[in-house]
Image 1 (cartoon, rainbow, N blue to C red):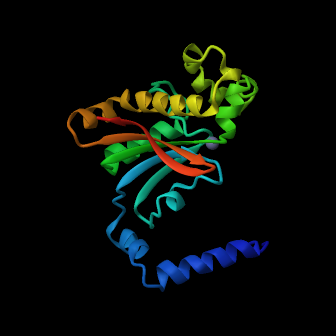
Image 2 (image 1 turned 90 degrees about the horizontal axis):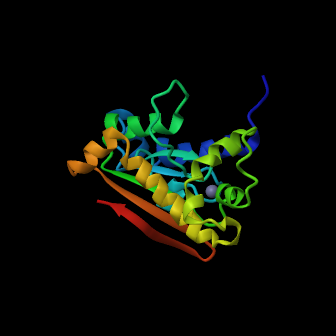
Image 3 (image 1 turned 30 degrees about the vertical axis):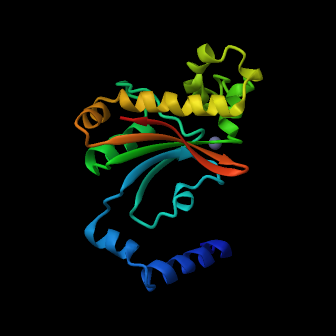
Length: 199
Ligand SMILES: [Zn+2]
């Protein structure tokens, strides 16, 4: 059997020093008593926008699903493999998180790919995924000439609308047991903006 790459071994040793034998009880607590995250986060897979680092979260605090461009698909009752929708159901219904955050960001390869019309090739997984952004073409007919920030924030709003259209989410929003926030993380200069909130 091949050995783990050195950076993995070292990184895990750091984790153990901090959370297994160290003073921070968050990981041990979440393992012993079960997880009770304070929020669910839908974020981009981009290596620069890790929600745990961004919000200084400790183990057990965030239930995270990441994908290209931080998109939420609409509810679909077909036999497809709906990973994001399944994660939403698990977070909202099973874990009963009180907040869902959708975190878009600047310099997003997914949003840029969509804007450049190169990312909607139906023959690629990425293209079919980014086709989720197609409703934005009505709002921005001249997509290529738009500000990336405008399109990125509109993508966050679109995901929030879709989030609220899942019946199990709508029910929690209506009863006040859930709040949803759309955020936009500007990388340079770093800044966090509230785009929209429900309710
Ligand atoms: Zn991105």
